[in-house]
Length: 408
Ligand SMILES: [Mg+2]
Image 1 (cartoon, rainbow, N blue to C red):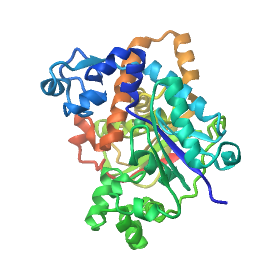
Image 2 (tube, rainbow, N blue to C red; image 1 turned 135 degrees about the vertical axis):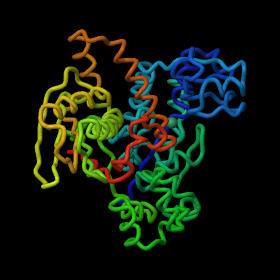
Image 3 (tube, rainbow, N blue to C red; image 1 turned 180 degrees about the horizontal axis):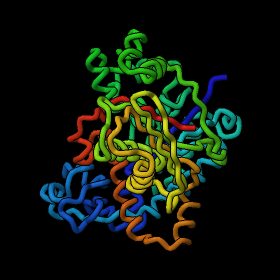
Image 4 (spheres, protein in one colour; image 1 turned 45 degrees about the horizontal axis):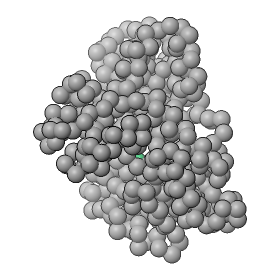
């Protein structure tokens, strides 16, 4: 049976929640930014009026204020964003129990089994838009399709507050002319690779030689080829399904052997950074950190330790991994590969309770968390290369490629 999948995306989520909390904000040009008092703070979100002044996400407050001197600046309220996210997902759950959140403001819904009760995919999408608007004050755009990838593409196609249907009759007309970057998992680096093969649109990708794609992009190449041809059969998870993810790991073989603590530290921070981003995406925290060191003779040492707090912070994961490194590496023999793995995972909400119980400095951690979450959202928009630390950028150990992400 043909599936009916919806992808629902809250429009301008941070800025919209701020306007719901303080309706005055919807009458003025407004932006949410990391630190409103710092001219070097970065714009995280803006409302429609601010958009008219040409204000864009990720520019500095200083630059934005030059475009619009009366711009009203608001600091992010992550607790409220989580609260609204939950409310919106609860509305989705009235239509199906297959609701799979993707980040804080997007979810997939499989409504195949709900059509008899609630109407066609488009009718359900329109009902959802109305209910979310009336009950939360937020607007969503919805893509309706026969797989997750095209549903996601559809929610991006027309917004705000719109429904786009991509079905078996019109998908080639709608999808193939779009740039490859519109496809799920095509980031900046994949886009560059595809561009070098003269593949610019999803149609080009669909007609490409699968073997060449695999040569250039590895497994991602064959996945993207299937997506471009409408062949995505991945399922929408149930909302109440326990997370099957037991660990999130990231390993890398470096372009040259690492021969000092300094070298290894740069590698560990880059790996921990990626692990942290993925943990935050799933709303999970790690209680245990693992480090695996492979030497040039392929001998492997694995160590693990509990973390002081359940965490999804790159800095704390890296710190834990560094302690393992100091305990198990002499600081001079050559290292070929490092893997950092976050294990013993708990839901973020559970983790927060444990942290306050142990009385760690919650304010400092909250600050760090806000910063790292802000970085996630910028990377989501502009690709991973957008923000890297100086040490990573200046290093010659080959951090640009060759990652092996693992989830178990
Ligand atoms: Mg959104």
